[in-house]
Length: 460
Image (cartoon, rainbow, N blue to C red; front, side, top):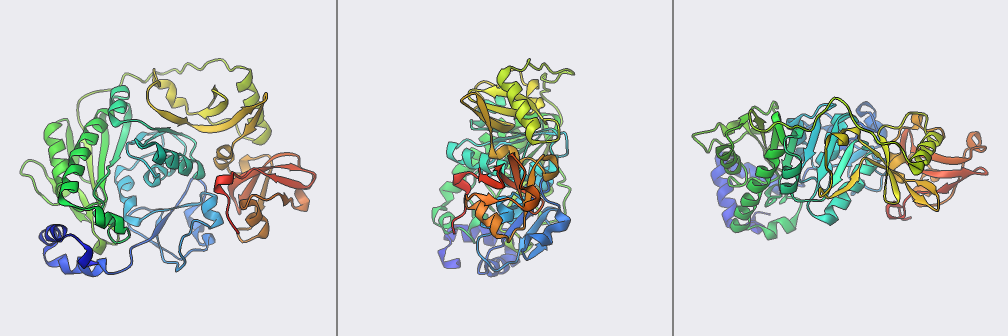
């Protein structure tokens, strides 16, 4: 591994680590760390043994674990299909832990794809408040949306726009903002040969320029008293402490504060003006591939004028009334958002969006959960709608064991036979892996016609 690394990179690492440099090289010769994060929106951490994976707690998040199983990809697991867990490099969980979102917060993830940190935020919010997940690259934004749907997130907006536009239209709107910035990826070297081949000193410096520009935009979105967390998965001084110091120099309304965690190690104090040791660094010797996290508090500046005590909700049209009737037909709980029709689809939209006077131009791909599509006067419920529900909230839910032939057939897209106790059911029916919804079908005559999306189906 050492032979493949750029000499300029190794020189900076030797300067950075001193007597620990050899320990770093030893770690780089070992297999990279793998991990999962249990999705507490759909699955209890205390029951993680049911996932059938060899797990060991990691220090970076209370719901995060090292994956010690010897098998390869866990993406074929029925629990993965059900959104019971998210595959995530362990130290990548650290940034959201430092951000510490709480139920009811309005949270922005500026560079959100593929969705590991956004889904971690969503689990922390527990359906309360608002998660706004933005990704500038359109293709990656679609992957982000798919992951939020799989994890059953109800209160998210997914947008595909430039951070400058968010800054202009959502100034002071968010309690907490995360910038997990695009970087040179030095923390991915052990698991990504492409990152090694693409590295150069010039690339690292170019990343730093872009990172500072993104931070400038993100800062505008933070309310007075709110928190901005800056993170990267790289080791470079110029992309980490130097970017943080340059930002603080330009923004006296922000201060760096203690991260509130004990994992990893302090940042390097490369400034006489700011205490950069308050940031946290994670190296492979600390149990993760590599991360930098800095927590910044906005002590002055803009305050949002968006928020009002009352929300204006429009009178539902006929299509929205039919959508409400469909929801009642399928579920026992009340809708968790306002039902709105946009084009040929109906959505359960977070109520918090009423506090934003103008959503145009924000590149919104999805606001809330897709309830269903309008087809020839009727509404066909969506996969995302059922993924956001618990079995006990469904009027009809059939549960299959994770290792059952019936669940395997369902995930393959096949029509399945209903258990004898459900043979008389008729209508849309949730399908659960154990106690975790993984999709739905339509029950009729003792059979379940499959509605599992073709793009998600397994191959035998």
